Amino acid sequence: MSKNDCNFDTRTKTFKNNIYGTGKGKIREAVLLQDLTQYLTQQCENKAEKKSAFKILDVGGGQGQIALQLAEMGFDVTLSDISADMLAMAQESAQERSLTNLTYIHSALQDLPNQLNQKYDLVLCHAVFEWLENPKQAFELLIQFCTAKGGISLMFYNQAGQVLSNLVYGNFDYIRSGMKAKKVVKLNPQSALNSEEVYSWCDEFNLNILVKSGVRCFHDYMRDTSKWDSDFDNILQMELQYCQQEPYASIGRYMHLLITK
Image (cartoon, rainbow, N blue to C red; front, side):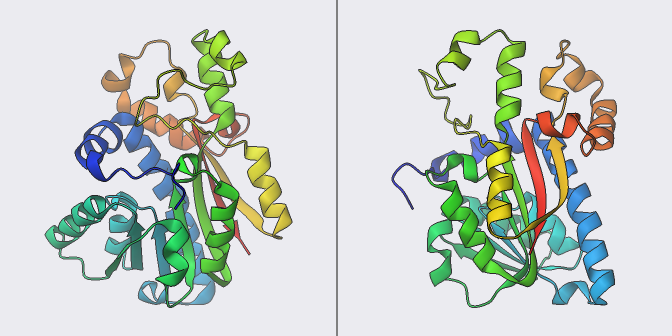
């Protein structure tokens, strides 16, 4: 782990309330689950495998919002995170749901090669890269964790969405400064990734992008933010409808890619 990488060990409750417990978090979760459910259903049908034989690794999975739901579907899931507090919350939630098909690893992403004794059919890494000093190095590690025909589910803070959001709000000086905040808001990622650069990594390692979805393609740009609560069901429905359609997919605040070897 680099000294500039982030650990949210002391902010687990804040994460739960301000990130996962909001409409933004619910949209993020819904888009990811829509993509993953479609992908996993197809993979299991093609391989004629039982779900329990399909191994999933969730890197930086935090409190396990996605990992727990995949485990409930019957998949064997390993959840890793640098935060012991986050993992403890995930484990508590799993116990409440009587889930026994989860394994927990307390580790930074960079130290995982020393912790893992197998490779995985699918590796998840969601909202992690924007907190790392060297995201490309982390990407190479994700590839190493995959089986020969494995896949990667990568969600990252999208630079195009960051620029658009600041254009909409008229933060022109901030954009001209390279979007480096004078005062860092601890839960706001500051290092968005350029999607074209991520695509180039895929080309470099001969990987295929099967699915590209924008996460919150319009929610964050709405003029009437009161609708975030009053009309949330319609917002969620439309986000799921448009997330894979261009040009909307490319301007999401986050981008989700399903990548295969």
